[in-house]
Length: 101
Image (cartoon, rainbow, N blue to C red):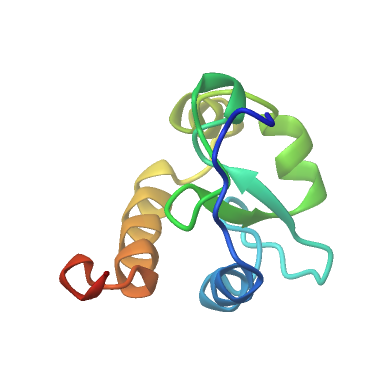
């Protein structure tokens, strides 16, 4: 993990928690949300704004390093709603690339 670049800031994590309003997967509203990589670190993911979502302890432990859509199907969670919302939130929170230095 030390070889992978992670750039999720504290402010971005707070914005993600606020935007999701609870667990990104099951919707549980808890103050004990954990950072979960949609694409796990073991599969090439990083702790970045576009790869991290807030997850309750139960979902985070259950998903482990599984591929998100396969895991959601197995758990009978609403995969389509998650993917649409993830794209919307990521787009809303990601600074416009043309404004970057």
